[in-house]
Amino acid sequence: MEKQDEHDHDHHDLDHASSLIERSFQSKIPELPINMVAEILGWLPVSSLPRCMLVCKEWCSLVREKYFISVHLARATPLSPHDEANPILDENYNVIDSLSGLLLRLALRTRKLHICNPVTRRIVYLPYPNLDSFHPLDQNNATFYRVSVLNLGTHECKVIFGYHTLHRPGVVESASQVLSVGRDDNWRPLSLSPLFSTEPPGIGKILKKYVLRHQGDLLFVKLVRNGRQDWDLKVVSFNIWRESFGEYAFPRDIFSDLSQNTHLFLWDNKVAVSKIIDDSLHVLVLERYYKGFRWSNSTRVVPLRFLSEETYTKKKLVPVKATSCDIWFKFEENIEFCYNVEMEIIKLIRPLQPSNRPPYEYRPSLVKLEGMTLEGVISKENN
Image (cartoon, rainbow, N blue to C red; front, top):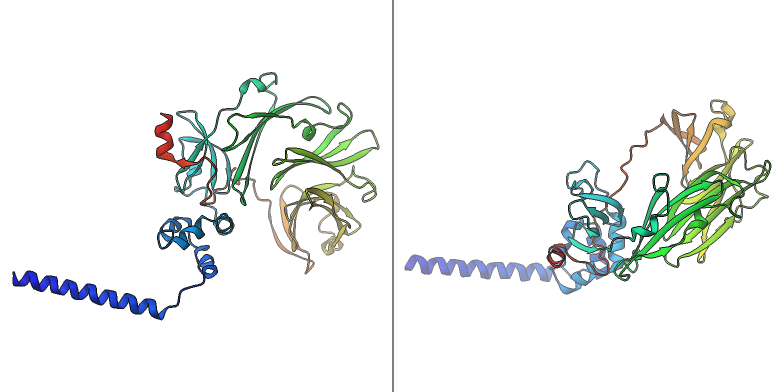
């Protein structure tokens, strides 16, 4: 009995000492400003954030803010395609798209189409597209496409499924459907024919094309030959949120001849049209403007000093991507190199890298769509 009393007394002393230490610790460390807390939490792995939400109501509200989620997502490191924890490798699902920490998937056993967040285990099931609208197309010779977009400011999400097939030069038959996730009960028909056809229909031939998804826009760049000497370069855009088209013709007075050595690539994730004239790369960029786009006011001229050495010939030189500092070129079919614009030197040469990037990239996030519920709850309701 005395030993029990001694044990209780010691336990009380330990609790009292722990309480004193905690109060002393709190009194010596001032409370951090919320913006400093946000900066610290923004660098933590996403798996640690749910525990941080339990600290206090203020931290919980902070982590749930859409702005914090978007900042944290931008800092997140993509999971390796060889990492066993990568949900893209789950053999029970066919991954259709990956966007901002969410996966658009088809469950192979139940054939249920859904968008899920593997980190939070939240899921929203989607209705199946109306397959009857695709039946008139020759699907054996058609190209399937899907577009998924997410507005990180509002967490609105749209998905587009469709096919298009070329009947004869300039004439395209297509069928598409769109779904606003959490808002539409069924898929809606959508016509995207202007993206794939020439204008007027049946006239001209698309010789080069480049498809780019730029935030909420789908851009289709077309180099069209309308005759032996008549060439046009056009960009047709489709804004997915407004479901509206725009067209931006390349200025004819920039390059005298579009038929020879005209290259399309991305400059800082923007459509760029380029041509090597003399010993310089001349580039015109399609920039964001108000609710659409416009071509830049002037042509950027980048001197290519290495051309004077005659190691690389213009005709076999192709720009493939660029940033404000560096331009990557492909030479023939076996070499690529990086040219620094500011120092005007080649800073890296290597064998052409095989295109073996995984089709999808996964970045863990806390993004939550309208209509999402815990996976266990929704699965019971659907069984």
